[in-house]
Image (tube, rainbow, N blue to C red; front, side, top):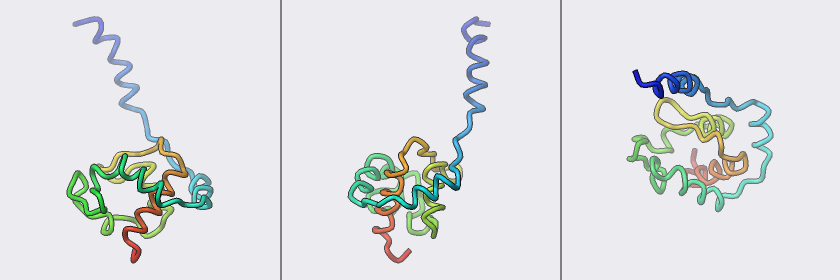
Length: 115
């Protein structure tokens, strides 16, 4: 067996066990107090969300459902889904700032005002 592979096995085991940081209730509460900017939310959405959710949240990319049908009723739940990922298909955006996250939520809510 190649010695390089032997050295890589423990590293791969550690990386495989890495977990996604969980969002705390306090973080969510503080984020919900931030002023929201849908214009910035659109910019962030276009950089990270549009590939799966498409331009107007209509789905059809990796996300087959529309955002309107799949998004949470509460902003707190949506915040958590964005930061931690949702189901097996949506990756976590744990490095997104709280401000960018609430801005994206505002932008999405403006796309579907009846939700």
